[in-house]
Length: 326
Ligand SMILES: [Zn+2]
Image (cartoon, rainbow, N blue to C red):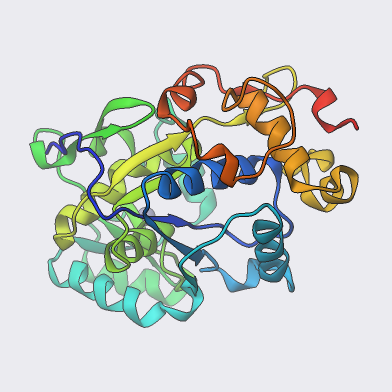
């Protein structure tokens, strides 16, 4: 199955879809900046969606802190916030459709089972599920169900079936091809704790919200093929995709993460004082501007180009320690 590269479909509708886990982090700021510039530079509409599927993991006050950080940075949106935690009935309806298609089965594997049985991980680190629970008999399922609540897996086509060979075009990373059976295997659409899996919720949300432009971190590039497969089954359109290269630690060895305290906006906001100072440094570091002078998000609209983003596709963007010094 091939999804041909497409230009912008107009009118453009993009989204911010953060997971609320506390204050924003420089890495999220960078992805949000590119998503905002992408939409605003072509006069599109932006939806803010809070990806709080697992409400137990949402720290109190984290949504408010994140919205405050986004607003401080000068990013605005046209719709939302829409909370995934309030949309379980919607996910249930689409989940039921997949079940009715006879494409799902209960998976009783514990984390430890998976660890033992999973084939070596594909190059991008996505674990390959080998289908241990696919052919259990009704009796085996009933027996196992007494011991544990199952998750639900969506069957992917066999290797020889072209439907399971997903090809798509990414505005930054170019044409990508993934064979679902080889790269990830049957994947979860509902977890054993009853929470709908990210892949299902995101695909349903993007389609129902009319999102036709998805700009997000390149850590999500490996989940693209699974989402396109769900789009195919549910007869949703495939959006235009751009995955944003990551900000890295100063030596380029790993992705800038929550562990880097200095990259947390709780630390950076009082230090930098003004969002323009932070955005100016970030724009200079990433090549959006040729000097580090303070700049507003709106001032970066002029001259925004995907070529600048593409230039970092291979290596990512190391952030020098001096970035955080003022
Ligand atoms: Zn299983």
